[in-house]
Image (cartoon, rainbow, N blue to C red; front, side, top):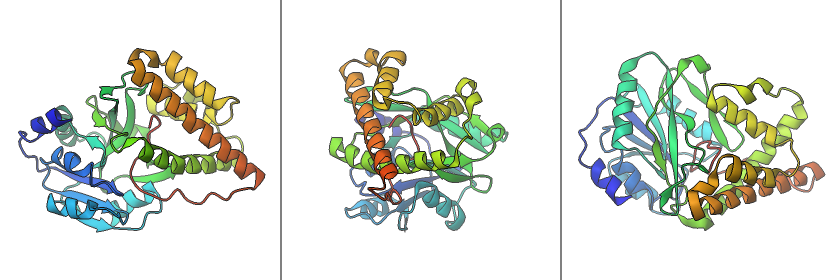
Length: 304
């Protein structure tokens, strides 16, 4: 990651894109994340009352900081888009454990100049155990990360947010950002995914109560984002969900080609799926009331 930062610091500055970063206890990740967007003259951090030095680090490195109690990811980002006076019309949405590469920065500027779309999907590269998970990381996994501040908003789905915008108004970029989801260690990853599992169980219960409504055509859609989301919803209705998730990631998606890192990551995802299953059972039995998944730190990302 140091080599990436050195390349970043040599970049020319860009004046056309604002940056929005959601944080909770991100003092370790924030310096590298901010260095990666040093080309922007408008960086905003929305912090969910961190208990470490996140706010001090952000302010020291030139970001504008706003603090807001976390409700959900869509709520945080929509608050920023509605209430914060961004300097530029286009806003890039990031998490503190993500790095914008020089190649992506150049493509972002080209996208802003393009003018055909209201928002843009950006692929990510999952980094784990010192390597890129090319296969088990579901590359390229797209999320809408760049958007015009006045033309789209987010809606909360499961543990993360999703764009509330017609697909034909969204373009797709080729260059990925780097995602260091494990940068704060496995303890942080498990804490985060415990919260995510609660939100996913609640979303699965909501879908079950509503009945029907499944996007069957999405399973064969050409749009990879729509296809991934349809598979995710379908998985909540299948037996042996953790095992199926492992087999899908490790065999069908060829996670075994990622070596030991791929095997470890696929096992972790199977554990995460089992956490969701157990929480769904608790909800069904009325043994547990799962409240809102309450803390910031990431966007909706199926391969976390």
